[in-house]
Length: 417
Length: 110
Image 1 (cartoon, rainbow over the protein chains, first blue to last red):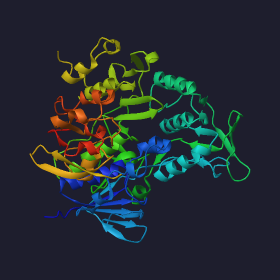
Image 2 (image 1 turned 60 degrees about the vertical axis):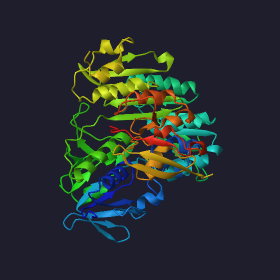
Image 3 (image 1 turned 180 degrees about the vertical axis):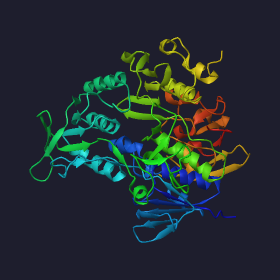
């Protein structure tokens, strides 16, 4: 029998697609999946990697091929964005004027790339990277670009810098803070990556910001920095982070504070409405703050799976899956397990000279997590270890740092010998 | 191009799912496209998790692409026990030579 419960999902990224596909598989609900972009829902990580490099096509990054959406319990509404939520009548209003009734509503609205409101930001060639269209536009221009200026030394900016540099483009990265990836990694890893990018030939300008984008014929030709530098640029990528998309939540009166606020069951202040993925600020035992908002595939996917089970009537505890992240820059694979920001002690396992090592992050005696470079086994061991919980006993800093210490065995046996 | 290759998946409940795969797709993406339960592929094929683990039928083991270090490392962390025939299906690209391939899906992926 076709299930009657109707779950409406707004957003078709990893979170929205994930919850929809899990719900269909569990078979307890009918799902309407609403996306603002036309076309099939797709994965974002390849946008700054394979799509940009030209080794991956738009078709290859679709979560599923078209026929997948012909399932009797799934309806995909693409290119018709949700513009309002009526909590009294429990309906979602679409731009076309259509109204979609819901029994449960999932907000998976994601985040929007921040732009820099400085003079010249409207010039042609000043670009953002968030959507497949953005990636395609960037990939199309790249072959004709001689000099690229990247604003922001975070994951996106540095991934693009590495791809462009590999193709022979002159690349300058401008970062306002004293080091790279300061939100995501320890000083040790940031320093290693700064050296790596410099070795690849990228110019890094730390502690400098953008004063203006310059250009005479409507197209960008340079960047003027706060420190008074003038950088030539025929393309600028602005990668200065994202803002969670909370507009719908805010307009219908849900609690919002740099993210749609949800409890550890991913429920908003309206018990019929849930939020997951980049747009959700959730109560979490990980890290050193009481709530988290994470921009990652893991977070989107695992929250989606957890919520799908809950909405299907399966017993589900509080959401507390181990957070993990990755970034591919050049031939360096960065993998982070746990929430490592807030660490006051970092010890290295392995030698950065070998380009395969891990930074282990502690706050006091508490092990927060690890940041691995080309060290998959370390990363997986730490993920497994953290699976015992955010405050579980862990090896000491000294044990971790000892290359003879068998991290994998420790992880698998839970420390029992 | 776009040649169809018959492959099949054996789910833990003993059911056999025969599908026509597209040459060039992976065994993982083919499973997802065909609603085959039990292959999660949480990372989307980026070789970052081990939730598309399969056991490959013995006859085909030697015809598969060689395993890289990442895959070997990830297979050390599968939810169901690693066996000599274990592979990550995201790394198995379907080719004409693999016609008739059968993979068994393990009990658990997470």
